[in-house]
Length: 567
Image 1 (tube, rainbow, N blue to C red):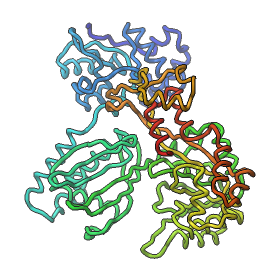
Image 2 (image 1 turned 90 degrees about the vertical axis):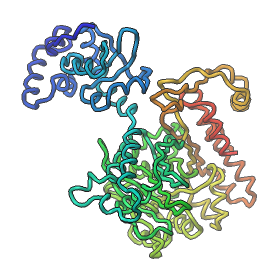
Image 3 (image 1 turned 180 degrees about the vertical axis):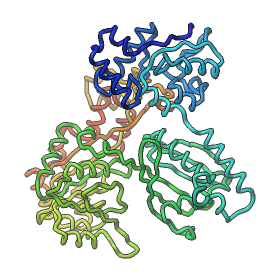
């Protein structure tokens, strides 16, 4: 392919009638004042979209425009160009053929970048135009730092040698701490976990190896296996970061710390557990992203969303969110708190631990070791004149009774409970020893939820149903089962071969209507279950999961998994 030619961007857009002469002059003045690239000035000023600019550039240069969101990228091909150069030159290797390599570039008029790419790749290159935002997202997704992490772990193992116990030099001091081997390894792990969209990092000492795993979309994946000798140094550094007792290795400990990674700040929750071969550590990654706390972005079905909005408009009553560990209950509660947070409301939370920090809210960490229990904090909180109270979990009868009494005496109370579904939640409160009248009077809404993996948009394909899937759908849909098309992910680099990319919640809600309340006061549990099922008819967890299947957003396999958790 011939070497691309330099063009004048403003004149090109003017020639294609995409901007006016006055807009060009204004943009040139802004470029001179700010020092930004002219293309960025056009985009930020709203004169043209990023895609519009890219397509105009492709037309002018007679190049193809490639939408990376729908491109099938192969990691082994992409990695022919080192990550540092991919980011520097805003380029990505897309395809290979008998002639050479197809390379996507955000700015194919950059002649220096073109020459450097040809030198590094040692091949004839054919350029296509891609969006810079999509290119950077693809780089974050495809360039994993596994080799770098393995190398840093090996380097740390070599520095440790055979001398146990003293890790002071390896941890660094003062200005050298960022160059310490342990610090570099952990920082690289944190950054790779963010790129991989991991929710947890597991450090697991085994008989001969230290296994480090990431939980991605609810499934654990091995990141690396390395020398067991480095485990104590990693644990020591993590304990120092979170303020834990570094001398205590026989008892579990919990804590938290903050870490900065490119583009964001993460809250890290740490849990240590003594095992046969050393201390196992699990880190939970919690992003400060405001999007996580936006009720409108949780994807609730319209009926449930309306029920929740109605419930939080009441000045008193209890709202419970239920589900197993890791089902997104805390995210739902905090999104609800964010919607309630205003200068005219006093909000107090009682948590163990405090997972997200929200400005304007009084958050209290339970501390059992000093007898600062849920019940004790909750009783004290009621004397603080709150409007809204969040209780991290209804763990026992005392906490449940105090919360329900608060809901009966003019407070809006939010909390969680571990139950399989919404219908069984009031019965669970009764099993805990709470008076029946309190449950019937104070409880307004119960939301049950699960997290369902969503199909990767890059590799989703029509799916022929297996006999078991067909039978399950026939029970749910009847004769209409054969009238729909079903999908499944084939697996690709974007989703690490799993066929799934991301998760979304599915919900069901039990609203304590008059009929349900009357049934709750009945001594016969079966009467309540019948009333609850009637109130929730057609709006169960399995039906919400089935909705995602019919919309092509998830697989039958995932919907069946959610259904099995209720059976």
